[in-house]
Image 1 (cartoon, rainbow, N blue to C red):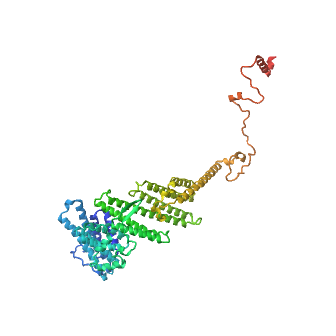
Image 2: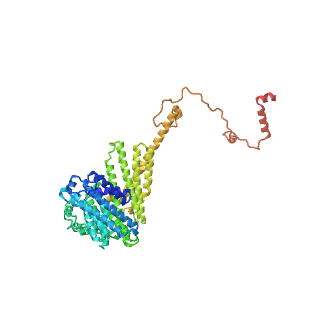
Image 3: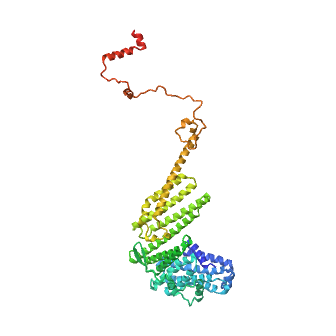
Length: 588
């Protein structure tokens, strides 16, 4: 019987339709349908008779009977929250009658949930211990909501402490969602109203206010699932003996005053120590514990900042500045671990590739996975840039930009290899050149000693890039660009030769194609010369129309100087002119 799952699904579907009143109407419709199916409704035309109360035997026969109580409780709860939203939006409507009706609806919801717990606690119901725990946590949540409306802060803490411990020992995303959305904010608000010290984390408050005398059987079930549920981890854990009171990042320190953040930081450091103790650090499962611990730490810091903001604390106050520094440091570390996991996944993909044994489809699939992981890394680097205080740190910003160029270059190289598999050498050359253009300006930054900070000292944190790795990538890309530039040029020459052959240029004899390089061997098909030879025009007695011809001097020929010619020489020329055929005929 999945009680929490049923409630979670009902609320998600109902609240998507609109407000709490729409969800209330949905619960009414489903309740009527369920009553008809279970034969617990009054037929038409007959006088209304109150149905018999549910018994544990009814639940053992059909678990759907439990949903009758759940839907009834949800309908009353939705009605109460609808009234509360009206009062919040229009304070003038907050009359005594409306307040009484609001509390009455919440009390009715709590009564239905308590009745379900009573039925499930009976051995005749055939329910499991987990179903009883879920029903108890649900009932405690509704009772705590009613107590908050009545301003009974200590009673509300007692109820929500029951729900807190139960949802903590149960494993599942739905239980975490209940904790983050309903239980934890209510405990923090109740502790604020009771003026409890902020050094107490919510787990400590829940253990302190858990009513063991009222929930003795429930406490036993909880201890069966987790024997340390009611014990203080600081008393048993040697790593938690030193409480985290300060956090340092980029030469700055901030005090850790919130207990939840301190406990979460201690858990995250313990998870890192467990990771370092592992022999196999290339397993993806090894990163899950560390990532979950740092994610919980980031959530705790974010929740604390939201609470301080809701209380009216400004961003310029020292406590808020310390929280902002803690938020940046925690999220930076979380992103580094996330990038480290993605890089290990890429290395695992590369190690599974066997040269020449995989088909083209599998190779393309592996390259596609690499590109997706590189996209995730680039997205993580963009998230770092949006953290508070990063933009003002020019040194870190320059380093992050260079590291982003490094991963962008790797991404382009993977895409280029996929184009090689598709026999698209031109696209591959363009991508290799693009990758080289990314790593070339980033190499001086990555090779500098300031590129690796103390936060990147361990390679598994993801953003540690050595100067040797950057140099190897640049050399590799230089070689790839040179190689594929030559291959593309050869392909271009072959394409031109094939185009020329298809156009008929290859039909000329060999003597007329001596200026061409035979890439595919000498073509002897059309012979060395044309035979029989064709009649071709040949230039004979060309005309020289250049005026410079008159000024050309040849050896043994003396040029006459203008203006020095004598009368005898002119007479001799005239006599020579008359010695022609006509001159000789007419001159006689």
